[in-house]
Length: 475
Figure 1 (cartoon, one colour):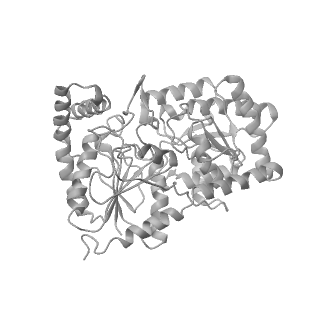
Figure 2 (cartoon, rainbow, N blue to C red):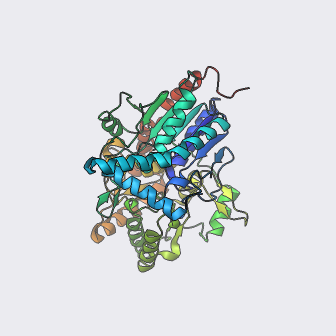
Figure 3 (cartoon, rainbow, N blue to C red):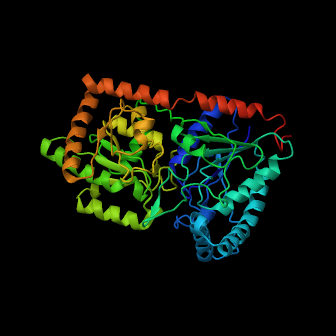
């Protein structure tokens, strides 16, 4: 079957896309998915990502991902359109308190944007002969007019008895994604009349990534109940490093004898990168006083995603005297590739292989407990057989359980020093591969293989393929 993807993210290298890569890899391996996926990543409607707004950036996409940079509102100046979209988003959040005149004006503003996007999506789906459209995090109200347009274009394509449809894939929903701007939520706590949700059109399927999201969705005004499917994990070969790994290490000025720590998160305040940097500074102090090789910290995110926060992180790393050993990777690509100047950009899998080979680990330190719905940092650590240090966040116990071994990271200075001391001893024990840490490593691996099993996705892809009786646009 032919897949198309619309992802409401607005950054060129995103954790959502790496999980999509795992799904596509599985589908290709099973002979169910054609290795040619059309994608729209939301650049033209996410003004909260100003460095990427309207046309995105070249992120070295893999050959199977054909990213659209079409801008249906190109006739409107970028600053005007950004203000228009932001005003709509904020009014949708506050819709229940708006007077009737303002609600009418909001509906008209939404329609003004929805019309050109509906035409664009209809043409885009036809041109790419999509059998199934995967809509990632399109239920949230980042751009309600675009979601409305997507629903309408999909209804036109799949309402006349043609096989296929839309698979809504939500990693976050309204109440559970408590993102704040200042002291105000970005999203309403539940859907309203201006937020199209799955089940309000023909040929809809709906999946969410946790039971908690399914419980939230059960209170939404739709008869369509989502299926819970956990994110499939990457397959990581932990054998000998290859030339690209060694080239990357040399290009980044990373000594082979020193451990590599990964912070697999975007440059986004709730991700708490500053906590990882603080913890890293204590790890370096302990290494220096104990005579151990000092580690490096590789941060996945792109500083340009939130320039103000990025500047704060650079200043924080400099103040902690760790900037020289910190690498901001400018967004980890979906697949590893080599830039025109010969420099390597490594994907999540390759970075995990480097961390494992160096005897390193993962720092995953959300600063806000109620934003993560899963938090893939612990799962990635378990896949690579390395330890993880993490702050407490609400979803952890529900997703991973108390039996999952991790180093807990408090946010106060005394707690950070204690966590760094603990993590140092665990890193050394993991490298030796004996005793309790060897048992913990194997136990963590079993937990994530059970809780992130890929068999549900295999069944779903098989089912979706079976529903394509006469694929649209087939010869």
